[in-house]
Image (tube, rainbow, N blue to C red; front, side, top):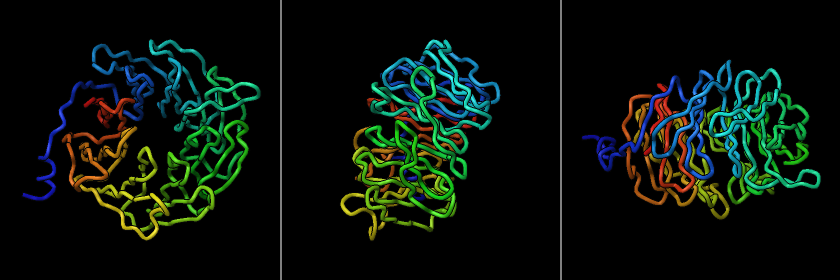
Length: 347
């Protein structure tokens, strides 16, 4: 018996609830209270799923196809974006609240600030939208606060600084930092190549991203010192930090590489390798607390690992359809996946 098969027999994850939607699941997000799970399918529909199962509410959101979803962290407000260039906001009952026409670009990246941003004399949560080469900032009423000067290339990913003061964006030429209220460009962590994604460490110490030449790039957010980790087996489509910023997990073909970024960072340290997938890893997500992470793969499998534990899964689900988004519930008691054949499964 191979080591891989031994690992897969450690513990089998059993679905607590599952459903089949109309098409490939491209986005999956829990509401802040953890009671509802929103799923978007590539055909432009949104489904609202109770965490314990039951009736699923499905409605058409974007006629030309879906891009992504983002729940407001304080309100019953789900925002969607699609290939029609529209940002739309919905109640959990499917009622449309507002829409904003961003332009002609496909919209695939949205992110709410986790902390209030001071806009004029008011503090409020702000929605960052990647609109082609521009960064848009919208308020919870769907009004444009401001937008950035366009970059020379398309924004491929974005995320907020932990305290809501800045937005980090990935594009050709490296990672770009924008002011969270004015959208003014503040800094460029330069790399002469295309960056696919970006993440700010929860402690604000590091920024990182994966690039087109199969490498991970990490910068000290303050000094700008650059660490280049090449030699990956595939493009870095997924990466995630644990809640302290100590561990950075990155996809490496069929494996997950885990970098220790504590202290002076990963320079000179060898990464840990976690491998049990038979095809490329598609999504990695740490729990909101602790050092346990989940990794889904093209092979249809979901693996649960402990960053501080043995190099074999704590638990595994053996599926048949490619795993797309992976999301832990806010209390970390549940983990949900969406698949290429439209399954949404909650464990």
